[in-house]
Structure formats: C-alpha cells, structure tokens
Figure (spheres, rainbow, N blue to C red):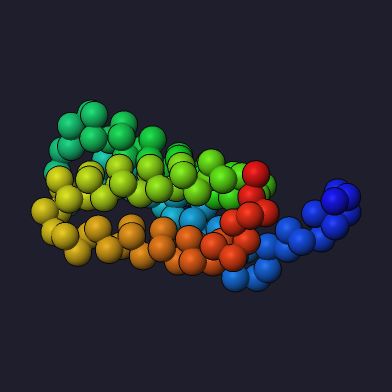
Length: 121
C-alpha cells in the first residue's frame, strides 16, 4: 500500500479533531489548577499530590499530541493520566462522582478512535 493511500485513510474528521482539542485544553486547565495548588478545596496539598497532578495534566497534553499524530501510545498515555487523575481526585474529594468526570472523556475519545484504531501506529 502506498503512502498516499495510507495518508488519505487517516482522515481525522471533525469529531476526533474537536475531542483532541478538548483533551489538550482540559490538560491545560488541569495544569493551571494543579499548579495553583489552591484550586482544589482551598487547602494546602502535599507536594507529591501537586507534582502528580501536574504530571497527569502534562501527560494529557502529550497524549492529545500523540493521538493527533496517529500514535497508539497517545491513547495509552491518556489512559494512564486518567487513572492518576481519578485516584488523585478521589483522595481530595472522596466522591466517586469525580471518577466519571475522567472516565467519560476517555470513553468518548476511545469510542471515536475505535473505528480508526488500525490506522494508528
């Protein structure tokens, strides 16, 4: 198969484009909240928590870039950052409802890329 036909098949489409933009913007917002340290509950958080939250937010941004470039590792990185964010959110809020705020975007992106998964490298 030639490169021309492969690149033609890799059409992101408007839905995946919007989803990846939201992932990147969500990562930027999470980075700002984590970096400000006082954005969650207005309490002083331990340093390890802040570092883990910043790392997860940066991972979201990198994952969006990886998915934009048709890399499978981007989805796996998004999974890892989602898990870290869920655990951190549960530790701070104690609410299982917080987990859905991370599971839903992950599931939506997964649903959108599922038919195109074989095109990812």
